[in-house]
Length: 238
Image: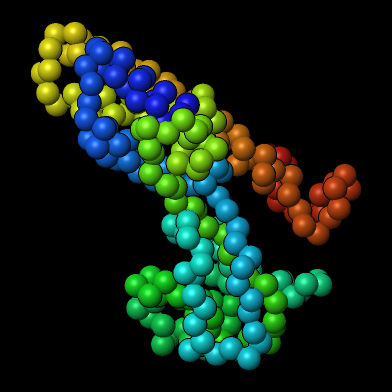
């Protein structure tokens, strides 16, 4: 869907009654926030490699995330890895910013100063290389006057099959608590059922993608060689 197509769809769901463009865009923004915040969607996962790490850094050396304009939040148990360009990879887990002093000498940990949008690596760091930062990205606002596909422009980077979700959300938010008229009130249960079914389909597809990414994963064996005797994987634990 494009912004204009989504606007037409919402107007149709609204019984042909128009909604102010500013109000519609705001409600779409609310719908996006609700939907995108419910899980770590594969479509929103991203890895940034723009930061270079120096072995001379200390727990007081800051690294800015200002250039990662779509950063929303970290994801994963070890959201940051440092790669030296050869075979060495160091894994870093996040610890509380409020307990920074307690962790300043603990290797392979980092803290995030969200107010200043900076990260600090704790402990003794003897590696130099590229920071691989895994995060959930934010998305730009939907322009209801745009003729560019929502997933192409990056405002709702999901398959077009699932773009109607935004329309159902908007109508539910706009009319759900108001006895607008008999037609709208009568359609709300059907619209809600369509929303739930479509959202469930999107979640199922995303779950399958996440499982595909991790199933039969053993970094110590090449593909096709089978599992190690002491390895516990998704497909051989039963």
